[in-house]
Image (cartoon, rainbow, N blue to C red; front, side, top):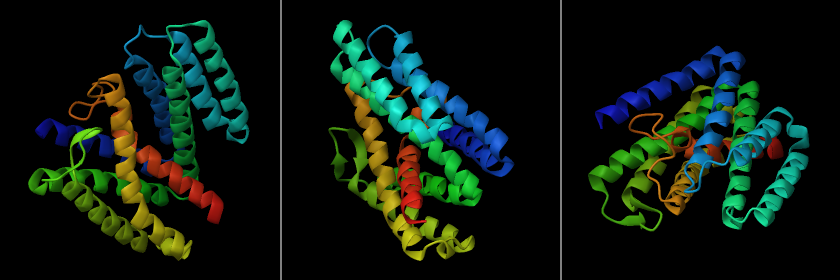
Length: 254
C-alpha cells in the first residue's frame, strides 16, 4: 500500500507538471507514452517479442497523433499490413493482430485528444484526468472498506459493486466542483454536466477493458515500470477511454 501511494504521488506530480508547464513537457510525455505503451502491449504476448508488430503499432499511433487529419488512412494501411502478416505468418493469430489494431486506435486517439484538450484549456484536461483519478482512488478505498458484492469476477475479481458506486459518486462530485471553480459550465452546461455524471462510469469501464486485455494474455500488469501500479497502460487505462470520449464530445458539440 505504501509503495502504491508513493508511486501514485509521483505519477500525479508528473501529470501536474505536464499540465502546468505546457506543450513542450506535455509533448515529451505523450511521445514517451506512445513508445513505451506500444512496447508494453507487444511484450505481454506469450510469443517472442515481434519487432515488426512493434514498429507498425508505434508508427500508426505516432501518425494518428501527429497527422490526425489523415488518421483514417493510416489506420487502413495498418489494417492491411496486419492482416497480411496474419495470412502469411501463422504464429500471429487473427486475435492478436486484431488486438494490435485496437491498441493503436486507443493509444493514437488517446494521445491526440490529450494534446487537443490541453491546447484548448489545460485546466479542462485536468478536469478529465481528475475524474479518472478520483474514480479509481475512491473505488479502491471504498471497495477495500465496504466491498462485498463482486462486480465482474470474470474480468477483475477484486472490483466490487460498492467500490464502483463509491468511485462514481466521488468522481461526479469532484469533477462538478472542479468544473464550477474554472467556469467550464460556460462552455456548455449540458455537456459538462453530462460529462461529470457519465465520465466516472466510463472511467470504470476503461479500467475493466484493460483488465480484460491483461486477463486474456494471462498477466497481472503490463509492466513493472511504476512500482505498485504496473506499467504506463495500467496507469492510463481509464484515462485513455475518458479522454477519447470527452474529446469526441467536444468535437461534436462545441
